[in-house]
Length: 318
Length: 167
Image 1 (spheres, helix red, strand yellow):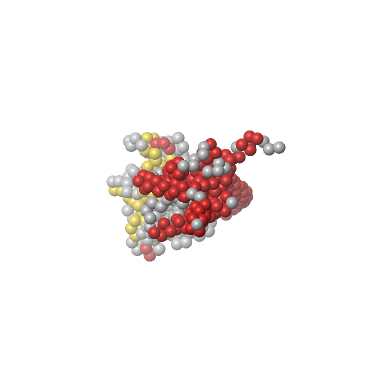
Image 2 (image 1 turned 135 degrees about the horizontal axis):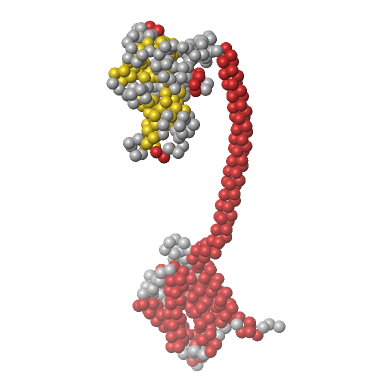
């Protein structure tokens, strides 16, 4: 039995249906000034949450994929690094053993490590002092293969460099010269600085900020940094003799106790000059412990462990 | 019979609209309103609405630039419903009343179209009042004339004239 209310309202229902149909038809045909129909706008508005949901899901999946890939990559890298660390630890142990064996063997045979090629030996025959300038004279010159720029090392460490060479003699600018400077590294901390001669027989490390005061300690070893283009890397220079503040409020003044004393070195070695713009690692020179490594020997022939040579007097002329 | 009459009215409306359009008449009457109003006079709103839908769709096909299907059908459905509601509550027999109703229907339909386009496009497009008034008046006059002509017993008069000639 039909509902009488619906029967009465049937025209209105039909009216509503027809008008809605016409409106829906029109909404997809009439374009607004922005070129979009009302129906499209309604559809876009209605579909926006779904589109946002899909976009968000896709973005989340992409992020998850990236995260998973990154995590996998990092884990693999971590494993590889751990493996590499283990290998390097093993290699370090082997190298230490080999170095210890080598040192022991060298002590047994009373020999010194091989110097780099073209290393020459010479005698330090005179030390000259002229105000702030400190130089030394060698008994060998260009005829013996010693040229300007050569690096002069003693048994203890770096002494200076050749600044002039004649056929039979060569002049060395010592580290204590007022105009001498060398790039240095603190062996324990790795901090870089510059050491300068003070012209009074000493050397001081400069350009160390005061903030480094806590990390430095007395007797910290100092080696050449190899960054100045003059001296090879890792040549022992000395140790920190004092920690004091200089006149500059920002920097420290660190006097250095030199590893090689020209007054006590009679036989020295001249390493070849570093070509311009090149930084050389003198591994052969610096491989062994600092006190030993700085002294290359021209041949592996046994030499006395401590050569009692008389120290030339400062200012003596050849 | 009503359906045949409605279809004939639709065909006549199409021909008249095309004819007036070809003649370049500035304010042609709303010919498609006549068959809808004719059906609505009986007071059957559903029939009137369906007639309005059909007439409006055909009018959209013929008149509206860009063929916005649904524009005049919307207004004609509404006008047909209103006219049928009126026809169910009162009897309008005088040509002047019929003309007035048709003129009012034209104005109402124009208002509906303006509102509809405003809602859909976002900016109102108001018709020129004088043209709208002229269109309403012409439609009303033509509808009154047709209604008056339809009330004349043409066959009886023709038979009477033949009888007089024979005598």
